[in-house]
Length: 54
Image (cartoon, rainbow, N blue to C red; front, side, top):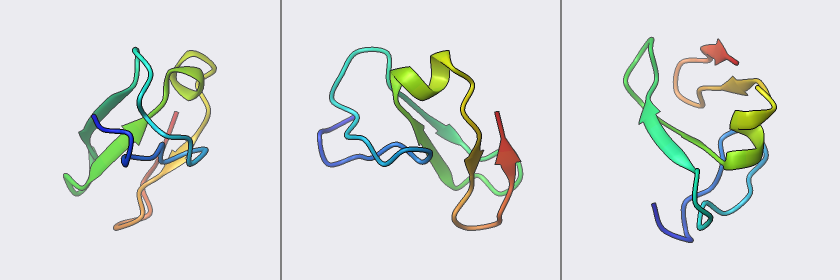
């Protein structure tokens, strides 16, 4: 993760510990999540296929 990467849910930079990236379960496009959105189970939507997840 670099400071350029942004959270898919809230658009925060992903420079803090606890941030993660993973492939979309539907299309394998990269999903990035900041620590706060992960901890609070904030929904995300894949920008490529529209898949929604917690």
